[in-house]
Length: 189
Image (tube, rainbow, N blue to C red; front, side):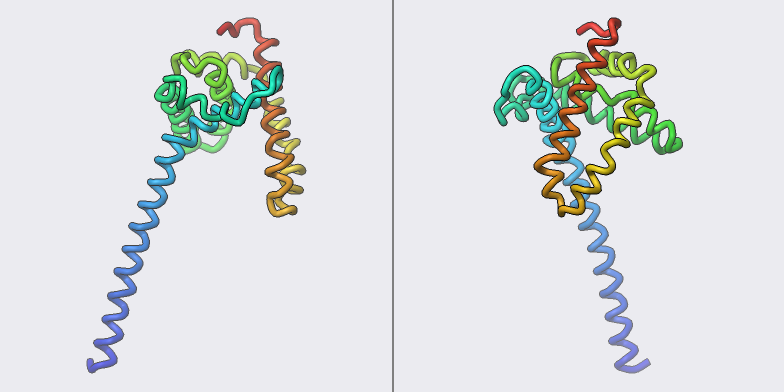
């Protein structure tokens, strides 16, 4: 077996344990990032949507994106958006198409919470379903219309995405929310 065989098996063993440690470390980092998204990111996301909804009729401050942390509705917002994402992911595990349908069915939940942060999650899901009934394909086509802008933004190394494309998309979606809300008389909140 000799010295070289022993040294080779030692390095093989170290390589194995390094791989195991790297996998555990990567899993830990992924879980921490997921937790940050759930705890902070979801609430800031709804705050950003609130900023764009308010931008329609007034000039909101940049602090608007943190409204979910200030008004005592943090738990409701974080949990509702988490459940929206979880349900969509579970439907996607079933098959991709049902996941896409549920994504569009639940699309207005963050917008509803941005205007009504105290609304119970069951009611937010129900209102979003009613608002999107018969509109999913049109909203899907609207999303497809942003592909060219997004590719152009990627070609500019994200500069155009940050300063033009993303704000344009979020403003368009806020207008979509207002149009669906005004056109759907069964939606009252």
